[in-house]
Length: 98
Image 1 (tube, rainbow, N blue to C red):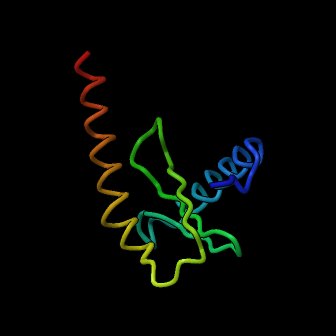
Image 2 (cartoon, rainbow, N blue to C red):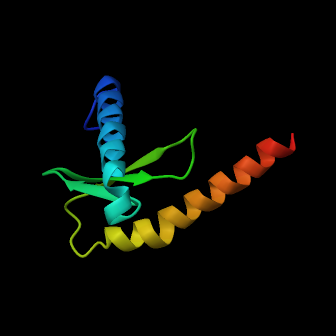
Image 3 (tube, helix red, strand yellow):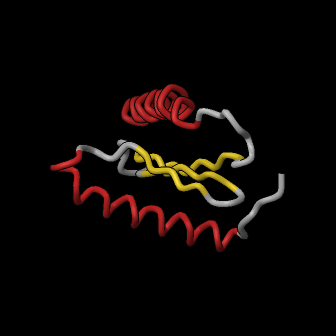
């Protein structure tokens, strides 16, 4: 697997995604809490997932855009979100017990 972005480009993209996700919070009272946002590019589909964690506010995930019939929504809602919720809640419990 070859990266599409350099390290610097990835960092800039991450910063921009955090900013965009923070602007979505402005509509929270009317639309509800943002859960994730997807952008389909020609070469990749990227999801920015809002996490309930101050230290790790978002998770960015990339999917191959060439795979047809691939249910990204199901993978995010039924796979990634439960795993991150479990991991973040259990890691918080571990760090609090030390």
